[in-house]
Length: 259
Image (cartoon, rainbow, N blue to C red; front, side, top):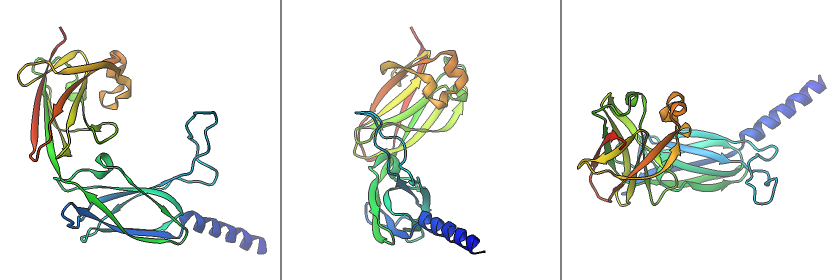
């Protein structure tokens, strides 16, 4: 009996240690300091990693006893979020709005990093969300250059000078002869539309071919599907610039056969 009590005590102790005793609270605000309700807040613990196994290598394995933890919080009607039972360590936090006209802070802004101690109650965290405009992109394929376009034969992403990587535009409408994509973008930054496809040249609304860069391997692009990727593994990236501005903007392109 004493042994059972001892084992239970160890189990409960380890469970409590894993759950943690720290907490946070804060708010998500617009650029005019208005509280934003029903915003998703991503909270993720940054685990400590083991040193690289070779000089110049990248650490990739979690240290013993470390665990990755993430959860999605939602702001209330006053724009407030909170989380309890957190383990000590480093965390990053960012916010994704459901409301139109706001930038996704988890995609377009640097994430905020902070540290928690055991038992700490960190309050007053503020996450500002910037205003956005909507970029609508239409890619027409009247001659069915891409036979499987309706199944995802085109990938459209947008990048800006202020972010790392690219952000996928969401397909909002499609037919065998065209696809429409939409994505919120910053008001004050130059953005680059990236259209990835193969077997076609992308032209603008005036019929002028837009700039392309080196071929890319399509198996790394999930939107194109394994069957498409394995059939013809090389595609091109076509680029078009979007200048800063305060209003929603549209861009139209067409596909024509390669010369």
